[in-house]
Image 1 (cartoon, helix red, strand yellow):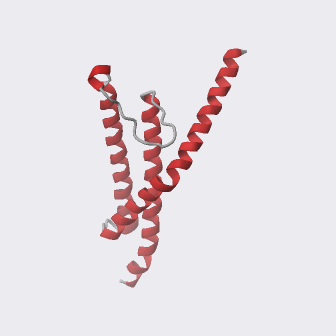
Image 2 (cartoon, rainbow, N blue to C red):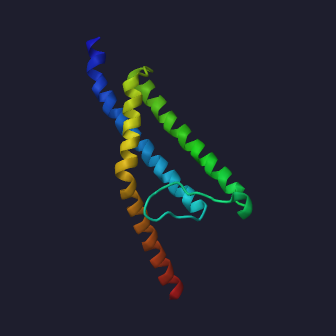
Image 3 (cartoon, one colour):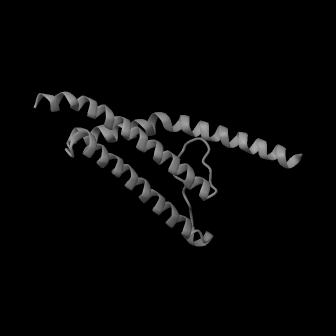
Length: 136
């Protein structure tokens, strides 16, 4: 009984780490969504909003965004489930859910703006290289 109690702090920290990893996967997925729909966000990495889908005939983009969101949720749930099985013998407790959600929220609040800046700087560098190559 004591051994299980000692290992819980490591499992808690591990779930925070897996929450951060799931948040990064979610961030990459959102970037791919914006790239696929040709709508890059500028200051904040928010979800792209497609307005007047029926007027613009972009209903297929909404379906694509829904499917991509669904896949990201399945991946995050799978990471949580596999971590619980492999590292806590399938025991899911309230603190494990809170640790995973805390890691995910931590990534969303802290790392989102850093990742957005990195992605935009890479995008700008690639655009400069492609404009130089086309001008030559």
